[in-house]
Image (cartoon, rainbow over the protein chains, first blue to last red):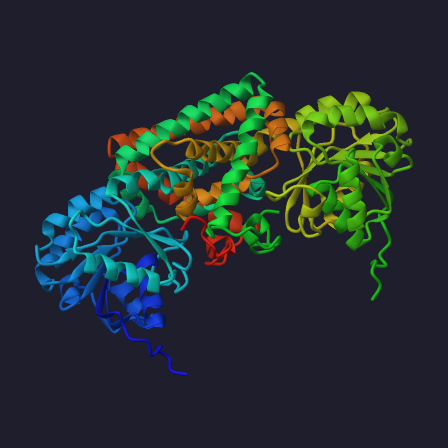
Length: 319
Length: 319
């Protein structure tokens, strides 16, 4: 059996600008599925580029974004959203006429505002966001199945060439994802509640727990299996990426955070006044949402996410 | 190979009052490890008792707690903490002299206050709390490995017979757990931050997400892989158990919730004013806590908790 599938590529040259968790997962699945004739890999860091080269999922490697995107048919920018504008400015002049530029950023209004002004009129801009990831980062963290059964949201500006949109759609379907289309503004509202505020409150409670006087950090870690540890997964996500997300989706995050805080105040009041019925009513309703997520194929129904009971190393420092 | 290990039991008769996730997991591991000569199973519901009998992890079955605990050497009460007092009142007169009474409740100050007055002076009371569980409930949800590598906290009142404390300790070690001893008050503070407040904010954000006008419930479910779905696991926990936890650990929960809300307000301010450095600093620190939890053997280091990328059913309703 040949190493490369004999499928006909849907893209001649794919350029990946940024090769972290998402970029390297795209490289791996594109290679496995034979989606591109040539995969050009770019990252600014020479060390990261050397690592990507050693992992061997590209056909050419460069630290220069303009060089990587030359002659590319599809360029996918996978960088923290705060540097989207700089990347667009760097690649804009080097893009070939008719090229398609896409991205994977977690905020879309800001990315469109940053990138669009730098892109020539003769290229197509199809912003995208695959709703997939893990708490790990860097080219070693990527894997070809990351997008399997996940959704990728496209937010093409009104009037974008349909052929270009369809090619990006087919590319993501080739990566195993389902695609959906919405406006950047709606995307940012949906992601504020399904991703950004959850990350914020996870980071926040881990921070709160780390700074208590009554409970030691070691106690927090030892006794975390009662619920706390679930939050630490997303609170271990890449700090640069997440700083940028909050700075670049400020309005929607603040809006959703205000709703969350209002609801939490109501729960606090129910606890203070011993209103067991109000607590029971909320706690009963929330099970339905989880069932729905499992039915949508976005979650495992195995208890504890399928964790093994003896997860982690058996050694207990300090025990 | 014999079905039952030939180990010498450390308890002649074990009575399990309540046979849900925790009670039935104790029954399974006690049977597998041969920890008890006889396991008496009790639950008030005839249907649940019939199910427990069908699963076959006991030696005798009853809907009457007083009957189940008669002649028992160790009684473990595994019921929602709000009914601990009623159970103690029911079993108190039936306990044999020298019997040890323990429990598995998630709050300890309240359980001690509820149960102690009903227990005769000639029995030993060793409250306990295994820090283990899943989002599922009922006798079918239990499994023998639930306590493997988890911690069980004992909160014996000052002056409790050492032999009794040691027997409860050996029992939990026989179940695969490590044990620790602390005061009920300290336990309640530790659990407020490691378990109770995490559950509260998980229930809360799932509730917030379910009641938005701008984002549909179907969108919340479809695009939940960006972080939200992690919260839904603990927000699918047993509503009765968790209502009781909040009603019975009110002071510590309100105290920890106040700290959480203060910290969240500071984060909100950092987002509003674009203070990227403050965000980056917090987001960098929180990774260390997760590493610690993994080192303590309380979590898997596999990305996404070891979820398979194509977790859940592939079918996508409404897609």
